[in-house]
Length: 408
Image 1: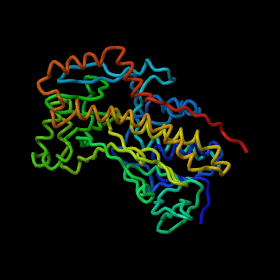
Image 2 (image 1 turned 90 degrees about the vertical axis):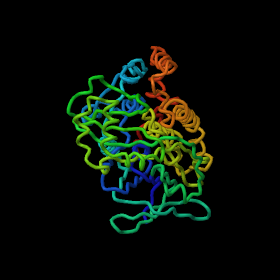
Image 3 (image 1 turned 135 degrees about the vertical axis):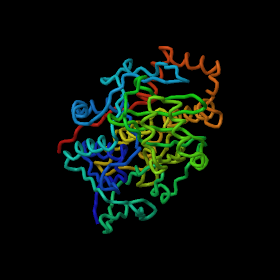
Image 4 (image 1 turned 90 degrees about the horizontal axis):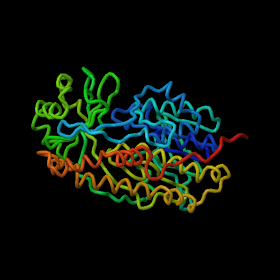
């Protein structure tokens, strides 16, 4: 049996950031990651100005910029039926980095893990899958995990589930999920970079009743085509050629690149969810990140919200964990702190999907209705560009690191 103060299940952005911050503040923490590396295709790649500000507060911003391959976007654009509009302007933000970074998530996670490893109370167990919660006298006191085929029992004062929107641990903890209907799914795929995007740093493209995003990854574009929920079979029945043609209709510069799609195996389905837990905690147990609230990919805010959860958890619980005095009331404080911004963003996302970017309504852009032109022009006015930059780049309640580095 292994004993620690905090066991974090899931080595994603929320889990690794929390493990890093807790270890920095002197808490004995073990992070469990079921895979042997962090390489997962089609994970969130946006690193928001608020996250970059946290790296600055940790003294790691220069190291990130020099060590992690990334692109820096001081502003983003939106293309509507071929017309380019200026989008969020991050240069107006009160942060040290006035841009959004796009970096492969596996590189960012490796960076966080390497930084966390400098703290002697941090332990990262790769190839380790948490299978079951351990209960004792009605409280959760640890997890049973499998590492290289061998079972371990890890006892902890607190178990944190950061194992994603399909969390098995939250199910075992009997935490109920409130689903918020969303009418979209996303098809993710790679296209080789045969030429630069002539329209610059584009956030999204809307037209011909369709919507897609293109993320410049240096030597290729990671693309996402938004479809109606449950419509994959219909799209596949129409054939790859029809799919490629629709991509070209929105992004003509990708015409040559689309020829690289030879099979539907190259196109992956992301089933979009928006949901949140009614309660985030049980005695000895807490959910954060996607385990507590799944976000739509709209605005790329999921990673940012997960990291904000981690910072708030460290701020509120770090000292109490170090002293072994965490109560259920303390755990409820995390939900109290983070639930309002989560609900706010989810409300905006649900409205946008239902009223503006709804594939069942042709994204309200078919024929370029005058009302959406007016809406876009208003949206891109300078004051609104600044507000959108703040909402996307910082979020409604940006967290800051309040704990000091612990020295025994």
